[in-house]
Image (cartoon, rainbow, N blue to C red):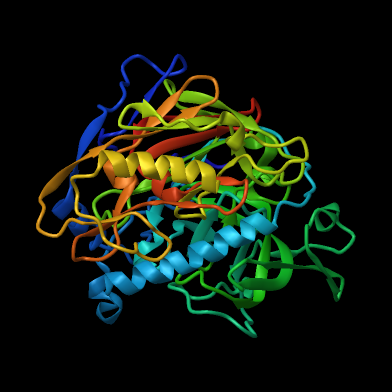
Length: 477
């Protein structure tokens, strides 16, 4: 195995906190109320990332040494910089995503393969500038590696990229991957056990295994399953089963494909198995932040000291998803009167709380959401409301002209004691550039709760699959 380089990012200690016996005492909770910096938040949301470029190291040290460049979107697509239209497109995709998750509570297979631990990682950038709520990592595909943006998705169990020859492809930021130019590309035989692990097999063609995957927004990918080398910094991961998509349609917007990091056997995490000790972590950079990058890291070394650890809950109906135990919600330092049963998974696998990178807005069952929302509204009675709400948000405020406002802290009470308190930007978000802010939660209309990426932003989140825990903090990005 090549020399391992774990890409790191400069982390600035900002405002979030976790309390509880599982967290080091140096991390304290937020005050019951905090300041939302209105103008600063609007300005940050208007600063968009578009493209990062890798520059390969010529030192001969093996693998590539990658340097990231961030460019303001307006310098590339100035005609597509309307914040309101980007917001509505993002929410439209989010609604489709949630609808898809609600329908996907069926079964999945779950095997794991490989051994020998390794540690590696890549930077994570916001897909917001692409008009997308998803997050992207930039990795190398093939030999020599071709740099590509891919969406990271904790609810998906396949890795795929668009490939030449392409009978139907959507626009992506980088040239479409050509497997004929990769020395490490090898089609998977239909008789391979790897082919048997596919959740949605599309049969065989000329002895090669075919795959297909569809998504709730009407997006889909179809093509050939192949073994290929992926590059993360200087780490080469050989013989990863990926989909080489020759017929693709979707709202991936700029990304070459998808890096599934769900709990199933064909996800990137599932394929690595013991090589990474079943461990990975990510820190999602705040929306529109053009000054820092988050990170996605794999391996036991990615597990932080001082995190607040919460047990992962398995669901045989949906083994791809990462469930956690949520006991309640807090507003302004006060626990909202919601029964813990609302968040519990039933014996049949319904309900529960899923951590999902692909969903933007956190959803709670209607009864829980309404109690939580009403408490928040009571404690923000002095702020001017927007009648009727905006899109899926029913609780919005007209903060035009304000420099900052005092808002109550929002907290998640996890099973076992840890309490995660969020910075204001993770629960009150601008929906236009005129000062309209909305409470970034919505009712699910079902028993399933989803903790989306807006609420996860800026917080190091670690998954220790081997031991069955998810950790929050202590690092931020």
